[in-house]
Length: 236
Ligand SMILES: Nc1ncnc2c1ncn2[C@@H]1O[C@H](COP(=O)(O)OP(=O)(O)OP(=O)(O)O)[C@@H](O)[C@H]1O
Image 1 (cartoon, rainbow, N blue to C red):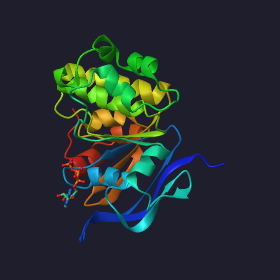
Image 2: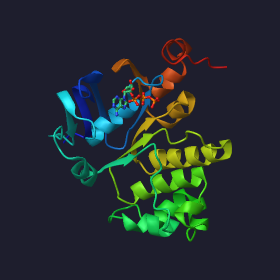
Image 3: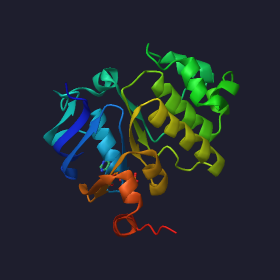
Image 4: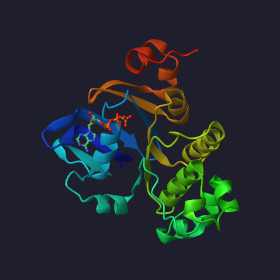
């Protein structure tokens, strides 16, 4: 039996007439992790929106566990196990942390105890209302709430953006634990390339809507020329 979770085959997608992604192919296996890197506006968020079905596939196909889901409605993809953590931290402001977590819960290995183990800060503040949380706590809650739906993969769109360094560290640690110890499959869009490469097994660099480079994350980390060429990154 194949352990393929998510596969893009020659996908073209975009907004109306505007093609954003073109000829994109990649595969994510059960429990593995993928960083999506690239400069601003190259199509990273669009790729995640295409996985979810918020952006339509114009050519090619998307497979989930071997089944073509290119025309499947977003809510069905979510129910099938694709867990999207959007860039906007959408939480319920008038519900407590614990209520935010339990409201969307589905049975599985992620429950209150296991998400609190991953995010001790949320446990400490479990009675606080959504509107009393810092940006970092909101981000933790958004991820934890998606985990409570027990997805097979998490799509994380710039989870560290705009957060204080201490929270970035906490969140990075939680993502590492989730992926490396708990075996949660991840697709991670992240501006901090070094952090993203440290958290994932494989990486794709997108340029102008196409995959410009594909490599194991550890290899790319040791490839300053490629990082500088596509990301303008100078590693110190
Ligand atoms: N709703 C939309 N309608 C039309 N064009 C859009 C829409 N959203 C994004 N785009 C365009 O699609 C292209 C890719 O945007 P996308 O947000 O996927 O890039 P990104 O790599 O995630 O960049 P960033 O890091 O800035 O979020 C950009 O040219 C953007 O202007």
